[in-house]
Length: 299
Image (cartoon, rainbow, N blue to C red; front, side, top):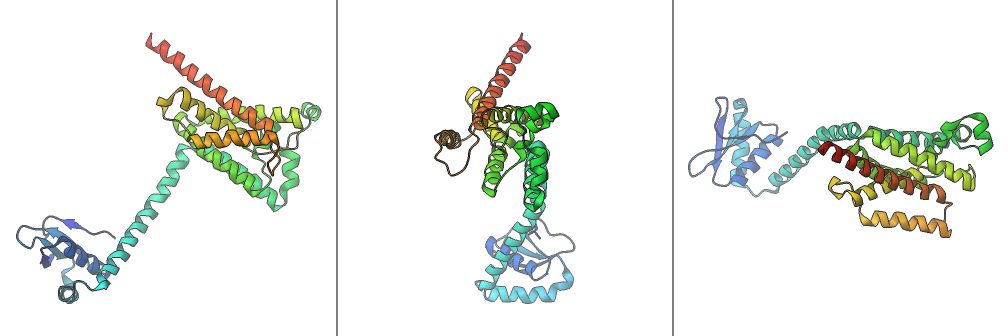
């Protein structure tokens, strides 16, 4: 429900009252609308140039009664109250209309980022619902000898989808969303897919070599996307892809704290480090490749 602002009176409208003050006219229009009496505002020439119009002539008696009340006591709090309620209703209606579009636009721009979030959530919920055995049986990495014998090389990726508690998955998905969506918006889904695969496979296999197969989480990939955005922002600031310094600092401090073993959780240090290195290396290659291609195009 919106106020209608007009510059001329139409044939099916009646002029109810005119004011020298615009706020008074708009306040009365708002109150009339709140009472289910269609009304609108018009600016006209003359001394009293702020006019209130009745859009439904058959409601002239009801409208005239309200106009008289308003003119007699325009400071009555009920008018301000109805104006506030109508304003809140308008804001709510606009949000209801806009939010689905925003959500759909976000999904269209970053489908791969949302896909990975969805898989992680699905695996985590399945584990809570009694499917932890299936998750461990099919998604966890295997020792090297069993991995070679079985040929189940998808397990080099799937530990990224496994999370062990609420803080683990919330922390990882928050950073994945924060950095991953920026990469996908800027460079497309294929670039984010490449970063995900490399920053899952290499850190997972590295963690397997150093500490065995008992680990899981998206944190290696998270460090990869953070490293990619960090180095792209450093090497090519004109691309507009960057993270706040406090996020970079926090990530590096967390990495160091994992190695000194003072955290209250067990940390896959190798996966974190290799993820960060992979992300930075991919960013360097990406910048180097685009620079060489630009130079060739210029020749």
